[in-house]
Amino acid sequence: MNRTTRYDPVEYSAKGVHMVRVFLVDDHEVVRRGLIDLLSADPELDVIGEAGTVAHAMAQIPALRPDVAVLDVRLPDGNGIELCRDLLSRLPDLRCLMLTSFTSDEAMLDAILAGASGYVVKDIKGMELAKAIKDVGAGRSLLDNRAAAALMAKLRGAAQRSDPLSALSDQERILLDLLGEGLTNKQIAARMFLAEKTVKNYVSRLLAKLGMERRTQAAVFVSKLDRAPQPDR
Image 1 (cartoon, rainbow, N blue to C red):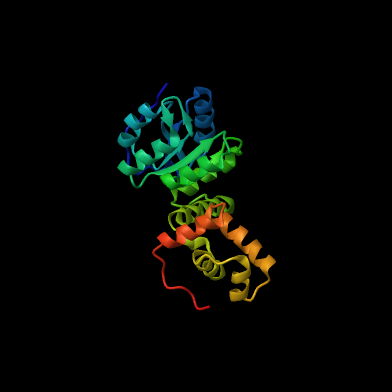
Image 2: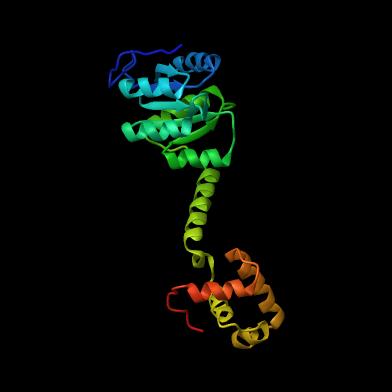
């Protein structure tokens, strides 16, 4: 069952309180019924529509123009993350809140990158969910410290894959240059004023960072690399 109402861009409760207009997307009707009953008890929330599939959501949400779309991640004809991205491309002022049973860091990060304002699991308490929807409707983000840290780690990883040298320290860049010259660990130790055993450990760590197994691979890499000016030695 899908529910729609007419579009009223600004809506207030009987007490004159601005109401957040909410659209629910979940493939389980029992869940939708429970959420509607729960959220309707809050005088600052108005559930203006619901859908159980991506297709029904895309058919209704652009016309109803809610403030917040609460989206399940897994849907029978797609997923809430792609739905979020598609909706925001058409309705940039819409806020999307992902509500799911699955606590996957990957799904959480994908949702954030798709433009979602928050990501909560279905075991959240009723009052907390209502507050989360109102916070998102007011333009606030629900990213917690763990989500923000995971996102930054993912972005750093992408940057490092595009530029392998970005993950290296100055000392490791010098070591890489010396490997490129074909020097042995003993020769490198003399150049860098280090113990030969220390150099051996540094080389192993450097190769691991670059995803390589042999020092000859590093030498070939250096020979093909258009390097920036080397740091002072």
